[in-house]
Length: 242
Image 1 (cartoon, rainbow, N blue to C red):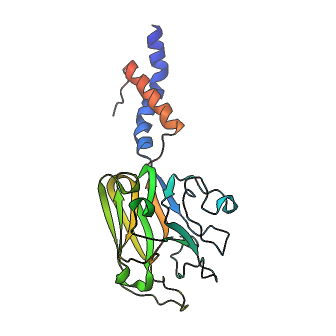
Image 2 (image 1 turned 90 degrees about the vertical axis):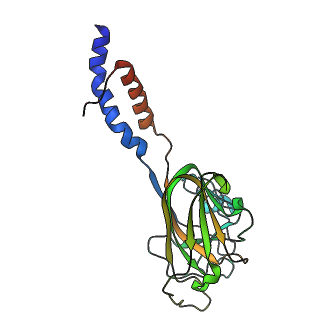
């Protein structure tokens, strides 16, 4: 009798948990990484742990970045458009809504770990804007997506970085990155890293902006509670009726 009363009281909660658990488990988080946050116009910061709730190589004076769970290898740097040739990314015409700066790799084609973007919790889609120096095929590149961190595990997808079919002229003769294209990949499963590879031997001939990832979220308190209720439902023998 007592068990029947508990069953009657918990049955509605069990059914609600069963109904909501699947959407909660499938929910994902879309994060956009905007570059150019730095305060210095004389020193280029390495991105490092900035998007992992840490700081860039310039330290706390640039503030603590958002906790997106994204970390970059040792070659990744954030550039801004400024009068300084030291920190200027020499870009124009950034697509709207992608921030005020760009990502570049100070020295590409060294090791995968140095040219990687790591997302330990995993991601299922990747998109970004990119420009090649002078919109030239000389600087073609590739972004390889892997199942493990630092370019390890299985190769899940490759995104070719070629010149835009229409060259947009730069207003300033000192700028080189003015023709922007979109690169993206999805439906490759769950990846933990993307490695940026340039065919050129010289550094920073590709710039990227507005990198967007669809991340696999950590289980939230609601999902954990729903999982607990579902387990109890199983004990009580409650089933969803469609």
